[in-house]
Image 1 (cartoon, rainbow, N blue to C red):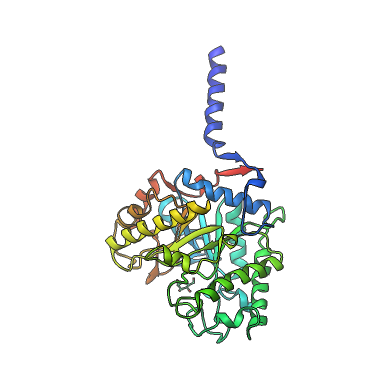
Image 2 (spheres, rainbow, N blue to C red):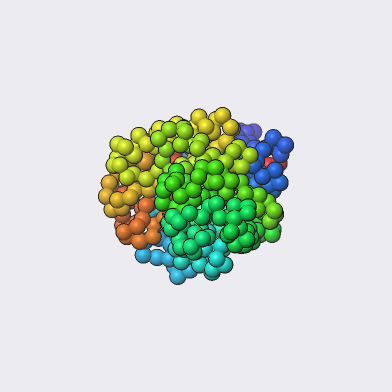
Length: 377
Ligand code: BMA
């Protein structure tokens, strides 16, 4: 009998060690975010993100549960579907969404995703313990063309600019959306916001050659201030250039530590396998040193295979060698839009088998693992 009690205690201990192992206590005063008025939940999200690299890196996918190859919500008979789960049985830990056209008060984003559906999926995924991140492919405020219309616009939306009033309206619509993300207790859901990304490339109106670095930084700061004025307190701010040649590339557009919480970089495999691995390694090394100086977390905020349907071992032989031991909090794969535009994997994909190998690696963290990383105040 005595032994049975002892075994019972031991088993309880083991169960507790495995299920509670990642709940830590934190002191609110020790957490310093760009937004000094950020909610407690936002601070907890930040601590969760910062502690992920102790266990590995979180796996993320853009529009993961919104659509995939040959399906889309809300038409799928499954309440929650994801190409990643079809392949591996696991849901991504990080879920990315894009807010392009929220500024126009449209019901659908630039990729025809309804904002009502997006909000609903954000709530569901947050409840399950996921980390939510938003990019914003907003239109050109001068021409009303897309993000890729490179007509000069940044100086016009800064304070005193001709399109300032219009931009303030745009940010107020964005703010309303952020504030509408509420959990079951009606508390704002904390999320990562990654605006004006890939600014060191020339393809967006806020990018290299289309505005000065000074104006870019001012745009970031003024947008940050407008969100504050609109009382948005549930954001962590992520700054992410495109692939960099050196740390000067990182610094040129960096708006300042007081305006940024997370550092990131977007890298695709345009130069083939070897260049891809090398680019990721050197870029994540730049991020590591910039992030360590500032005690901020960092991530590979966008990546993917630009040649879908090729490279059967893309996950274990291309992506993984680049990111292993890099210290990133997450890697986010870009969207699975259609057969000629998908960046991850799906059930009939040539890389599906290899993805299952990648998923089995100790460092790859999916939703079930990341949801356990938690903090108490
Ligand atoms: C780009 C492409 C576009 C899309 C945009 C925003 O990289 O995938 O088709 O509209 O992202 O999601």
